[in-house]
Length: 235
Image (cartoon, rainbow, N blue to C red; front, side, top):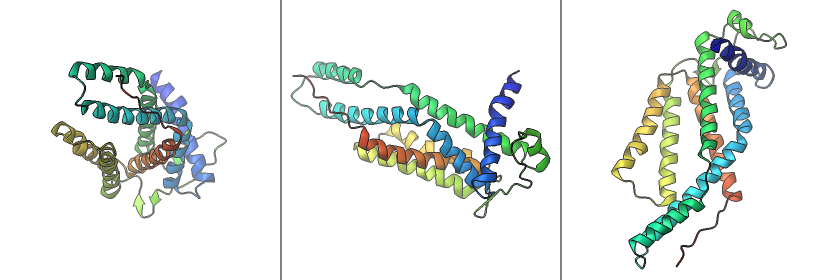
């Protein structure tokens, strides 16, 4: 039953959308079809992305407020702790929004992997294609000289470097000193992502990179609309 639900309600709809985009939007370029389907997914998840970004902005302000409070030499430690608790309560966040965005992207990532695992030759495409979708014949997996179905060092490295740079910029923006316990996240997280993507078809790296770039655009946009006021500690 679970296999039937997975195939009929998840795999086949995504597969058919991918082929439809391939046939009609991207001049039979599977790479751009993946980019388009990634953007469509992120647009569908946009309300949750905006909530997640609002939480991010609030947390950034909270970190700065707490840091400023901790550096206040005119306040005793007990009062500082009380004020920090008040600040934490005042910054209402919804962590579920980010979980939904990440969860849906992970699901599509698995489905895309399954597309390439099952193969995209003519007979296998016809098996899962809806009657209203035109059979494309031979699928072009070449994306500017790179094979979407093959492992690729360059694209995996590109994603890993992008994550490393993004983490570095976040620390720099918040003016936080990198402690020893932060080094694991700072270096190991991009490295693990790079190694994981290196052992997977290049299409995964393209999907992740497109999603990351979309997140950057959303982040820049939300900087304009989400400007929470700084909470002043009570005297």
